[in-house]
Length: 392
Image 1: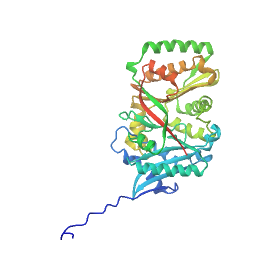
Image 2 (image 1 turned 120 degrees about the vertical axis):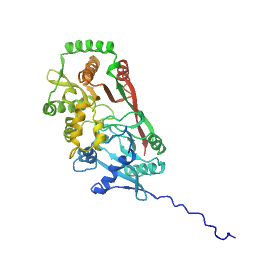
Image 3 (image 1 turned 45 degrees about the horizontal axis):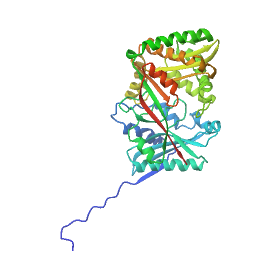
Image 4 (image 1 turned 90 degrees about the horizontal axis):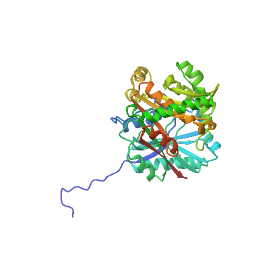
C-alpha cells in the first residue's frame, strides 16, 4: 500500500518532433527558415550571415533563375513550436541533364545538436527526391557557382570568409549519422604577405613575363564598377563556362544565371582585383579577388537597407583581408604557363592592394598540383569543407 502523502512519479512527455515543408509564399515561414542560424550562432564571433537579399532570393521562385529550370523543397524541424532545424533539397535538372546524373543536392542545413531531428530532416528530403525519380543526394551544394561548397570540418577557430559556410563542429556527425558518407574535401588557405616566399614569387614573376611575351598574353585591368559590369563580368562568366563549366560536376551557366551572378559580383568586387588574361581581344583566363566584408555582414545581419550599406562601404575601404575566390584558364593555355600568370597576379593583388591577410577560398583537394604550388608560395591550408553523398 502506498504511504499516505506520497506522490506519484512525474510523467515526462518529451517535446514532439515534427518536420514539414514550408510554403515559401508565406512570410512567416520564410522568416522562420531564414532566422534559425541567427539564433544558433548568436554570440559566435566566427559565423557571419550571407547577404539578406541573396538569402531571401533562394526562396523566391519568381526572382531566382534556378527555378526557370529546376525545383527545390525547404524543410523545417520543430519540437513543439520551437524551430530546431532546417534543410533545402534541390532537384537541379540543368546539372543532371549536363552531367547525365540523377542527383539531388542538399544545402542550407542548420540544426541543433539533435540527431533525431537531423535524421528526420534528411529522410523527408530523401523522400521528396525519390518522388522526383532521383537516385542519389550530395552536398552541401547550393543554387549557383557562387554558393560555397561543403560543411566546415576543420578551422572552426577562424572567421568565415565572405559568403562561405560556417557551421558548428557537430554537423559532420549529424550528417554521417543520417546515412551520408564523405565525398571529397575542399580546402582554403591563408597567406600572410609578411611571410611570403619572396624568392619563389620572384621566380614566378620572371616566368610569367616570359610566358606572356611568348604566347602574346596580357592582363586587362579595370578602374570603375561601370567598366567592371560592362566588360569584366561578362568575360569572367563566359570564362567560367569555358574553364570550369566543362569539367565533371559543374555545368555551364544559363543567361539568366549569368545576369544574376554578374549583379552579385559587380556589387562586392573591387575593380582593381578582377584580372582577365587576354589573348589579343579574346579573354582566356581570370582571377577573382575581392575585399572581405564579413565584418560588415556580422554588424548588419547581412542587411544593406536602410542603413547597412554605410557599414559595407566603410568595410570596403578599411578591411585588411582579401578573398581570392576563383581562378581559371582556358584549357589550351593550362599547360603552357597560364597558371603561372595567375599566381603572379595573385601576388600583385595582395601586395599592391595593401592587404595584410589573404584567404585563398575553396580549392578542391583533387587539384593537388595547384595546392603544391600554393604551399610553395607560403600558403597555409587552414580550413577544410567536406562534401557528402548518399544513395537513395
